Image (cartoon, rainbow, N blue to C red):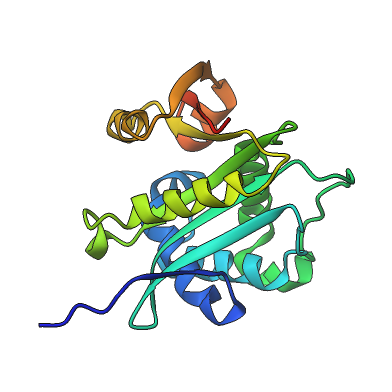
Length: 206
C-alpha cells in the first residue's frame, strides 16, 4: 500500500475552513470554557478570522497536507520592522456569533497574544489532527519553522508557550532542544481558560 507523502505549504484561503476545524480539535477546551459556542460555531469563527483578519507581513501560517486534506498547521510571527497596531476584523462579519461571545473571544485571543522581541520567532500555535497524531507531523512543522528561522538573519531563537496542564508537551519540546526560560502564573488566564500556569520555552538558533 502506497502512503501519500505529506507536504508543508503556505496557508491559502482554500484551506481556511479545514484549518478552522483543525484549530477546534486543538483548542476547543480553552474556548468552550470561555464561550457557549459549539464545535461548528468555533470552527466557523476561526474560518472567518482567516477570511477577514488583515494580513501581517511579519507572520506566516503553514499547513501540513496529505491527499489535499489539512492534517496539521503551525503559525509563527516575529517582530515587525515597522511597528503598527494590530487591527481586529470588522464586527459586521461576526454578528452571527453574538456580541457577548465575540467580546469574550477577542479578549481571550488578546490575552493569549505574545509580542515577539527582536530576534524572536514566536510559535503562536501548532496543532495536528487527532487522527494523524503520533506520525511525526508536529515534528515536520517544527522542523520547517526551524529551517525558516535559520534563513532569516534577524532571527536567533524560537519561542513558544506551553500550558502548565500539558507537561507531556513541555517534555516533547525539551527533547527538541527547547529550554524552559520562565514559568508564569496568570489569574486572568485562569478565570478565562482554566489555565493558570504557563511555561515560556526558547530554542537558540545561533
